[in-house]
Image (tube, rainbow over all chains, first blue to last red; front, side, top):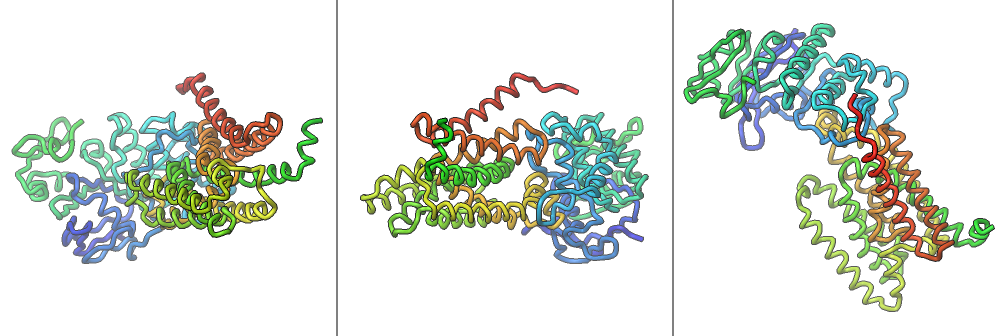
Length: 264
Length: 272
């Protein structure tokens, strides 16, 4: 059974075609790392899966059905977030605002809702953050609360857009380990976009690499490989392996120098 | 006792009721206004309201209705323009100036009632008549019920806009509805503190509360509480000192905000 299927899908942002004629399928319960240079279509792909953007051609299926906005099966951690860093609001209330926040009326959670908020907070091990104001938390701690928001309502599909951005290596590792544990405990599908391959190497089941309108999905060794990446980047790319780490270099040096960073 | 004599006058009783109604709306709507970083929009709406209020005086209707009409229209326009208005402070400022200019023209054309100008610019809660009181009661009921109805998606759209959109919240709709509620609150607040000082009553208590509490429910309650205390105490102080009510209300709102700054500064953030 597939969580996400793309059949000859073309996605466009305004005039610009981001992905063209892409076909792949992600199995339920898989942890898939999504990579590619800036503008390769990582966020666009997630938006299409969430039903925020229609495919201009081809067919997308999420759990066998067309993607719809407000799909309760999909948890989402967006890349662009409101500036919450200077708010004195406590963590629990921030997480709780996302619980059935789409319904009209007063933002009262009720007993069952409170339990669900506590469960989500406990899942990301953020109990200590629940009573602290957002403005006193570090970037990594706020990230954990955003993850708790994404987990409200027990989604079976988790779409995480650049959750490692602006985190130091230590917090990157804890975030990846946390998501991996949740994926295994709850048997959910995870799409995890990132700029660097290395922090995700031990956690990913497969890799989805986007570039130049194309996509390659497969095992880490099959995709993070000179031939495949050269095609996606449209330039000669080599993949070096150093102490279980991956370094992607093009003719001009590390590709991360111009497009993104792979090694920190 | 002096306090007892204060309530013997009907205009004082009316002022307390009117001020209370306005404070409840200004505090609660102001809380979301500050949370959404929209305080400039509130300021802008009150200035547009000036043209509405003076225009109403010119054609012989109560200024409150002119205010409501103009602030609502401006709020809808702002909401529909939405993101295209971001970073257009100059354009918004020019429209504001135009509204104030029109207000001046309307006042000139109706020169026999210059007292209206001061009341509209700086408020006159002691001059609220019975008819206006009923109007304020109705507007408060509408404002609070509408705010209650949209508060859940409003909060979601404010704190986590992208997630809210993915979950099916229409950010545009929520934004337009909220600005319409702000328009009502601004029109009401003008009755108490006037066009020029709406900012103090709507933003002061809310900003103070957001600095003092980390709980959402308490935050809204505290904002309303501060607005109520500032308004009622301001009216009482004006009665005893014979100084303008608006002066006292604004001083109290601002004092609360400064006190919250001092409190936070005196107690450095603890590292846990």
